[in-house]
Image (cartoon, rainbow, N blue to C red; front, side, top):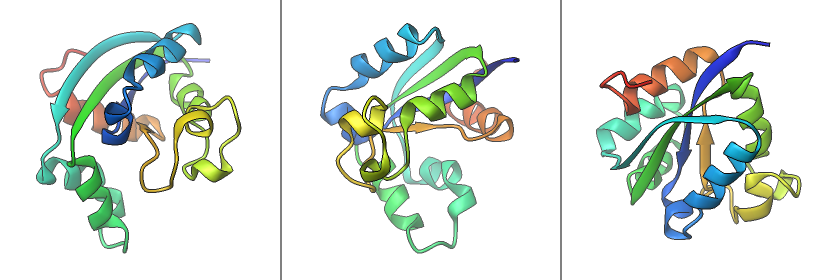
Length: 138
């Protein structure tokens, strides 16, 4: 196992529902370390860059609109196999397919608003961390 740092976003619906603290607690209780945090409003341009791999897909505009619809809490989280640990903790993208005990299984209500994002690979983590923490704090 390797120590990794990954990006976790508490999306606008998670912020509206005041779930940021619960998400941080669950990450830390799992043994992950919070390395940096930033509360921000994602611009449309930043949203397009963040979701660049989905450009051209029919749901792309909705992703950008949603991520830029309210405050987002960006977290840099580290630990052994952090990327896969976070992905497992989040649960399936569609909350209806997410197991109880996962973040989405316990808290998300619909596919389009599923409270949390986590990098899906080392390459994505590096790109996303640089986007949300451009000052290089992580």
